[in-house]
Length: 310
Ligand SMILES: [Zn+2]
Ligand SMILES: [Zn+2]
Image (cartoon, rainbow, N blue to C red; front, side, top):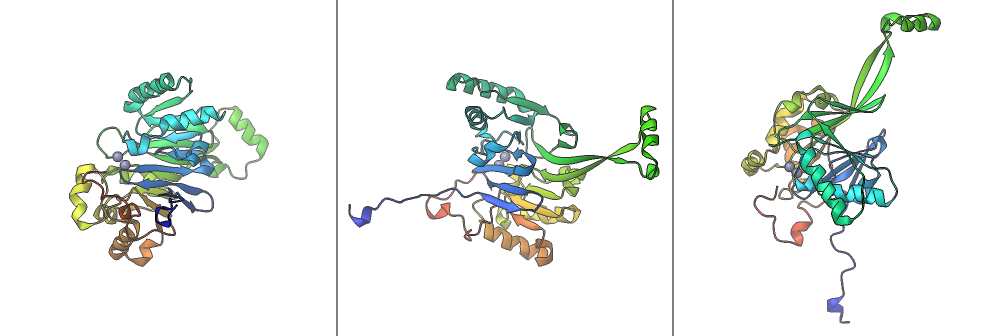
């Protein structure tokens, strides 16, 4: 074979992000209009499912934020692969309004695939808490993306002895409890909050969103000329993010769903210019991979994305 026509050994191999926060990792992929899937492996939860990349299969719980294909396409594959590999059925939390069509879709896949893939859909309404274990729950809140859309927070729940009972001997506490006296109080710690797609709104006043140790939010557009796109698609623009940041008390903020039009490095540069180095310390871009280029890699190989790709 002439050297001129050597076949490529690989082509556009998809790279996933993995950020180590000590207590847990954030693993995923998130590019506007293409695919969004974000996993917290240690908490057994995947937010959105994208095209169901291999790592997503290991999470027993999937929290779907809204019905756009870039967030939902892999759901049938996720459930089917888990059944195929002998794993227990996935539990899928989903906005209540989407339960019926998604249930129909998954039943349709059963007919198409001729395999009785089991699944569990949990319809969720803003404010509702799904108790995974006594000490861990998933709470949802409304977001602003047009149509039914929810964000989710992973909440650690602990029962603590009431401060006024500190030092009370054990047998006495047991006696009080047997008499029906409440001796403990509930402490909730939001560990991770994930917003999916949203524009500016009161979601950013939610205590879970403001206080989560790690907040994972979209910011799709960064260029000054993209404000109308953000409005039309009900996404966040850099200007919105700058406005919201002072309200957020999160230890870390992870930004995803950045448009390929801007590119991660340029997005980060534009944000730094607005908020300064000190503020940048708690902000990470999910897709800021080691080898990110100023522009997305796809641009080198394909025509530019269409005007309304997001
Ligand atoms: Zn999206
Ligand atoms: Zn969307």
